[in-house]
Image 1: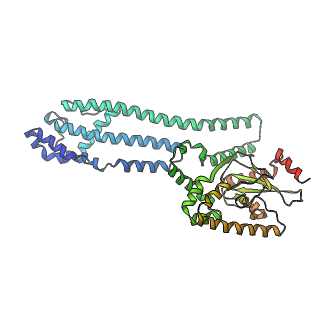
Image 2 (image 1 turned 90 degrees about the horizontal axis):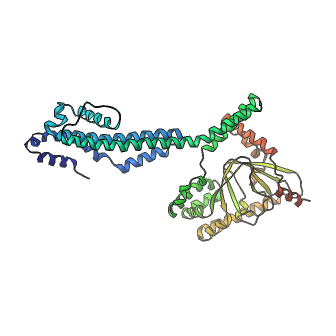
Image 3 (image 1 turned 45 degrees about the vertical axis):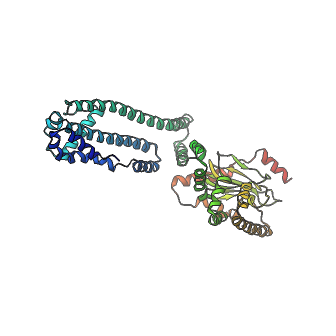
Length: 437
């Protein structure tokens, strides 16, 4: 780095005998310049990134952008103030330090006076200090040009940030207004209107908290190794809730990273979308990460009675697809907007077979799983797409007994009601009727 103290001292010596007389005062002026050594731009940038990383609110994003710009302007003014004091100090008797009789004043007072002059050039404010010496005039011209550029950039940055926030909120504001207008025009009761509005607000708030991977276009530009690390951290917490994938990760973390990058992906479904139909080959295992699913199936191969189960976030289905040929036994639909992590069975086999230790562990688990399913079927139970634990009544109703806020409980009750009236009567379900004739 540049030795600013030495540079100032050399400039002072070149000024002649007057500079030699002022040499004792150089350390006081150089204290400000020494702060340059304390500025580590890399560390400062990392700190700002860490703070910005924790912000999820649009309003706080604008506030942070304003304070970040103000901080940058203050830092620039700090250096300008240092240079202004240096120009006045080096100008001798013609400089503002001598004219204002601040030569012997306290260091802090000198710094405040210099900073006030600097800020007055960046704002409509005024300063009692005026340039008269040639060096001061040059400093004044350069500062005004710099302030013109920085002020323009500051205003445009804040305007752009505010415009982006308003654009994101414009759609929600418009839809909220149309909903309230619709409820008023059709003379719905105030109680029903309040319930509908509260329900929509809760749903939109929950949706706003999570950003789907498909909406982040910048993720497509990641390099191979970095993308593997990202996919691993994204998918591992979800799939390791299953005992097989937990042991898979513990057996070989590099293989788990490869699996996450090649065999696992995310899927999103809108409300009432169909995930799969009955009698179709199962090729994927699904981990529900957001929303709720409704699964309708027949209780036996000869029965016409249907049963509907609800799957919630943190649960999985279609594990059979990983270990054997299996046709879906029921029909799965989305109760709400859902997101899930999906494991492709063929890719899992491909990755696993290329690593001997992991392959042996997976083969042993597959054998145990097959034995367990045969034992389950031997008692006359149907092997459905969901795990056997979901068939119990307590599991099917556990959504209503979970602790949560009043809004969340109301949403769960609405989902339970909607699950009973959800229509599965599409073309594929009609084919399902033909199977039992």
